[in-house]
Image (cartoon, rainbow, N blue to C red; front, top):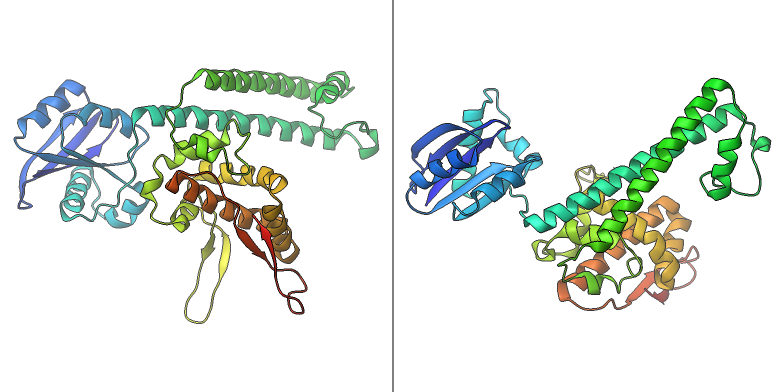
Amino acid sequence: MLTIGVDFSKKSSVYRVLDAKGQWVAGRKIENRPEFIHAFLDELAGPKQLALEATRNWGLYYECVKEHVDRFYLGHPKKMKAITQSETKNDSNDAQMIARLTYSGFLPQAYVCDLDMRQLRSLLRFRHFLVDQRRSIRNQVQTLLDRNLWPHERPGSFKDPFCRRGLQWLRALALPERERFILDQALTSFEHLSAQIGRLEEFLQTQTFDLPGLPWLRTVPGFRRSQVNALVVLTEVADIRRFRKADHLIHYAGLIPRERSSGDKHRTGRLVKEANLHLRRAFLESTLAAIRAQSGLKAYYQSVKTRAGSGAGIVATARKLASAVYWVLKEQRPYRPEKVFVLSPAAACHPATVTDR
């Protein structure tokens, strides 16, 4: 089998080809046009495996070549960075390194999902982008109010200035001319973003989803009434079979702390950075709803909160929720509450209590 390493760039790509014995047989720089790429691949006789490093537009290249190669591999960019760093880094060397790693079986791979799943994932990620933009506008308005009003000057009939009555109050609020101009622009942006998010969510309702795990996920606390986070979990996970254990899904979602341990010293820090932040966000947001819906999870959250604070309680409960999601999707079954051992503050004198999750 021929092994093809590709350094994929925006306008052109560099190809390096190894034969079945690992010897170089071809190499070329080709303009990124489908007809040129197809012609080069068709010139190479016999079965072919092709690999490239994941970039933001790898899906475009994948759809172009998937019918012209026997195997396609996508290199994990963060894991490859530690392997491919070199003092003589260029496109040709990168293509050679990708080919060598693929031939030897040491290429760190990223998951390749189909086009429909990628498009749905992009739609949901764009919604998160809009929500984050709207949250930034809200924060700007809160800052403006803090620098112009004393606490007693704010109405006591509502807490959120972005509720219906709050927006009416903001539009009528007397401020200096420059501050009033900023507030008007912020409110216009807020209303525009809210309308965009509403239209996007309406568009989501018109789509048909080929997501076999959705009925099972709907049985898990926190996802029973979820309109968005359930879809986020399924699209970001894509295929639960790629995770051998529940801990692997928890790590992928970034729900574990960073660790710096050596010898007898054990140190943990904040949550890991190299994770799927969209999946982490979905689990954390769903945990808040799950705590209200499931007494066992609520009791577990309260026990961790008592010992380590509310933030640690939310993350610990999110780990349990992610583990439950893993088994529900893995076994294609409804959620079954399990026994959770809750350590009370008086555990030194009394045995731990047991509650249903």
